[in-house]
Amino acid sequence: MKFLSTLLLAALLPLSAGAQTYLGYTTLQYERNKGVGFSTSEATHGVAIRLPESKMQLLKGKRITGLRAAFSTRKLSELRIFATHDLTATPVAEALVSGASTSVVEFDFDQPITIDGQPLFLGYKATLSNAEGGKPCLFDEAADLPTGYVWGYADGAWVDVSNRGLGAPILQFVVEGSADFTDVLVKPVNVQGYCKAGSDISLQGEIFNFGTTPITSLTLQTAVGDAAASQQEVTGLNVAPGAVHTYSLEGINASQPGALDLRLEVPTVNGQTDAEPADNAVTSQVFLYPANVQKRLLLENFTGQTCSNCPSGHESINTAIMGRTDDFVIVAHHAGYAPDLFTMAEDVEYTWLYNLGGSIYAPAVTINRLPYTEGASSVVFGNTTALYVTLPQAIATADARQPYVSVEMENAFNEADGTGTVTVYVHTFVSPSTLPHALNVWLTQDGIVANQANGGTSYVHDHAFRGTLNGSTWGESIELIPGETVTRTIDYTIPASITSSYANNYAFATDPSRMQIVAFVSDASESALECAVHNANAIGVTTNGTTSGISQATGAASAPQFSTTPGRLGMTQGLGTAQVFDAAGRRVGSLTQGASLALPAGVYVVRCGAHTAKWMVK
Image (cartoon, rainbow, N blue to C red; front, side):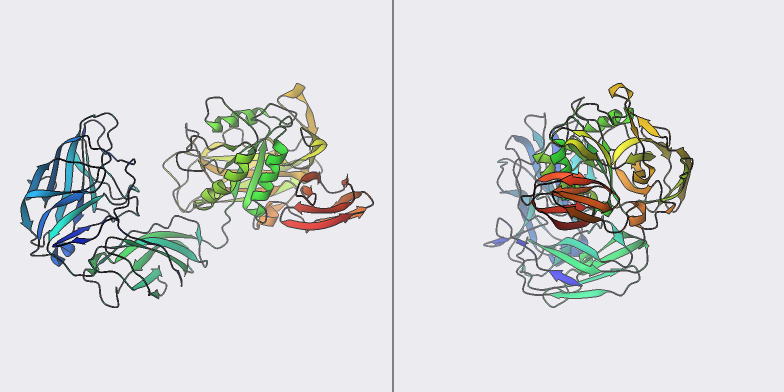
C-alpha cells in the first residue's frame, strides 16, 4: 500500500483562548455567501451537532458555558442556542441571544451545564427577518460526518443531514478551562468509481482532529472483503486541533468480485491508542467487477457538413481520446447545425439532449449523456474552444462512474445477401438508479467521402449514425435486476444504400466492412439531464463472433500501413480513418484504406486509432 502525503487544513481560529476550550467538528473554513437552509415552508432554521457518549466521557465533569457560530446573514431574530439530550425534549441549557454575524461569534448560555457523560446535542434555531430565500446556516464543505452527527431543523422537525455533502456546520461549544486529550474522527469513505477484481483501488478521505493536541503520526489500516489487512505508518504530520488530515491510499486490492466491505481503521494516534477509539474506523461497501468486464463510454458528436468549425471539433475529439480510443464508442449525429446529406430523422430527435429550449449548435459533444459538471443545464457542450477545454473534464466525470452493467454482443452476418443477426446481452451487477432503463441498438458507418465545410470535397466522415435496429428512436424498455441478464436478438438487413431523411432523400451507399452495430444501456427519463448511459459496446457488422475483446468489438485490423510516392501519402492497410497533420499540428486531410492524399513535400504526422507515426513526403 502506497501512502501519498497531503495538505493539512488549519482552523481559522485557535482551539483554546485563555481558560476556554473550543470543540466541534468543523474546520471553521467557510464561504459566507454559501448559506444553507432546510426549511421550505417557514422562516425558522437551525442546525445541531450530536456528541456521542464516548466523546462526552472524555469531558465528564467539565462545564459548557456556551456556543460559537457564524451565519450567512445578520438578519436573524429569535436566535436561541441550546444544549439537550434529546432534540424533542426541553433543553438542559439555552439562551435567547443577539448579535448574529458572518464572522464567528461567541454566545453564552443563561447558566453553564456540567457534562455528565451522556450524549448531547448542541445547536441553534433562528428566524429570518426576511423569510424569502432564507439560507442562514453555514457549513465548512469538508467531507461528511458519520450518520447521526449533524441535524438540521426543517419545517418544524429535526432531521439527520449528515450525508448531504455539506460537511460540518460552523458551530463549536465552549468548555470552561483547558482540556488535554488526543482524539481523531475518521470520516466515512465512499468508493464510487469503477473497480475490478485483481486491480488496485484508490482511496481518499479525511481524518478530523477532535482532540486538543496536534496529531503527529497515524496508523492507517485497510482491508477489502476477506483479504488480509494492509497497514501504513504515517509520520511527520502536524494536524492542528480542529483541522483535517486528507489521505490518499493506493494499492488496496482484492481478488474476488462482488459487493465487499472495505474497512479503514486508525488503530493508533501519536503512537498510542486513541483516547476515544469508537469513531476510529469506518466500513464502506465497494463493488468489484469481474476482471473481464469492459467499460466503454458513449461519445455522441453533433456535427454537420455545412459547419465550418466542425473539422476542428473533430480534431479536438481525436486529441482528447488519443491513446485510448478502445475506451469509446463514437456516434456522429448530423444535427445541431443544419440537416445535411447524412441526417436521419432520429438525429434531429436526439438534439432534445441539448435541453436548451430549442437552441442547438455544432460542433458539440455529450459523454454518456451526463452533465459534465455540477449544475450544468445541459449534457451537451462544445463550440470550438469550449469543446477543447471541456471534453477532458467530461471524460473524467464519466470515467469516475461505475458501469453498473456489462454490454456484450454476438453477431453473425451473411455477406452474400446482407442479412445478419445480432444478440445483445445486458448483465446487471449493481442497480444503477430508480429510473426506467432503455436499450438502444444503432447502426453507424465509417469512411464516407463527401463534402465538408472547411474540409474540402474529399472529407472522410466517420461514425455517421445510419439508423436504429431495435425499432425506436429512444430504444426499448428493459428491466435491470442485479444478478440477471437481459438478452435481445435482432435480425437486420444492410441495404445497398441508406437514404437521408433530408436533402431531397439523398442516399449514400453502404459498405458493411466499414459499419458497426452500437448498443448501449441508459436511464430513460423525461428530463434530458437524467438519461445517463451506463455502458456501451460496438461490433463490426462483418465481424462474426462476440465482443470478447475490445479490438474485436471495434472491428480493428492490425496496425495500419502507409506508403509514399512523390507528392502523395497513401494508406495501404487499416480499418477506419487516419488523420494527417502537418509539422505545425494543422490537420491537412484524412485517409482510408486504398486512398491517397496529395501533399507538399515535408514531414507529416498520421494518426489512426491508437497508432501514431511520422512520414516524409518528397
